[in-house]
Length: 434
Ligand code: URA
Image (tube, rainbow, N blue to C red; front, top):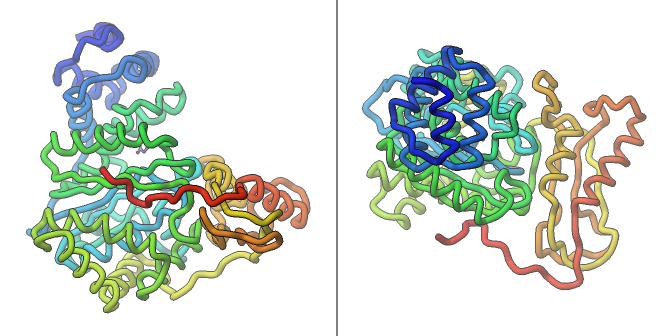
């Protein structure tokens, strides 16, 4: 088999066999196909598209390029994947919540990507929290507590690591098939029985339009089902941050509010709704209304909080009820009216600029910086009223300017990301009906 023939077939929209796809993935993993041919093939996939069968074969081959987490109990294994967005903290609550139902949740998670925060960065706001558990440590913790949130190991889907770096360098990231294979090969390495996907659309998400998000959702679900995992999905709104808090320690603190039985209604609703199909798929609930009742009770009676605390401590974290934040500053409404939209990309860039995310791979994170949304889309506001509070004391930007100047600059950027209109905007649906 020749790499050039395979590139030409994809270029000419001729479907590849599973053997041909395995050949490409083997060549990516062991380095026998040079980077320029892999990049050319990725560009052909991006421009010409590949079929659902090819996407499933690519996912399976990338999954098989590395190790899978071995099963360590008879309990069903479940997990969630979110395509990411501002303030998306559901993983922190969902993993211990599902563990309350005698399910194993081996969540292999990631770091921040672009403007979207990463679950591992959030949990590392607890001093000492370890995200580099070995397979034995993961299994031990699953047997003791039922949930783990840690990083992918070097041996999980190595083909994805190599291909992702080449996609990044060859402008071939936004291919539905390549995104699908990348996400699913890592998730399926957890040896799951059931998976739920939270596919987000909107200004603070990877997929900016509803149509793109629907296509990604269909591709992810079809691929999961083709490889034999009970896969379901929710399509959810990311035109404004989820909950009120954005940023690492900010989101941990807001998750604690939910675990204590309070917290913003949208965070609670989304977390519960993501768990519903998993409880049904594993026989823990007969239907959605029973699942919702059981899940709400497991939060209300404090069981989930106990599991969460055990998880943080088992992974070396110094648990505390609230984590410290940087100094607060308020951004005030320049006029009266209705909050009509947020520019999620720019809000995310502000958090990164304050040091809450990475501009370069090796950047250190200031976990204490972030945003508190004092208003949400549709709220009526008066001129001079605080709209967004940001937590920042000038330690993160490294721009060399004075702290006061940096704080003014962040205020200006945040203000530019908020629109106020005379009329209320149409209401948003957190969960888009299918
Ligand atoms: N997340 C991934 O893991 N891979 C992609 O290709 C895009 C988002």
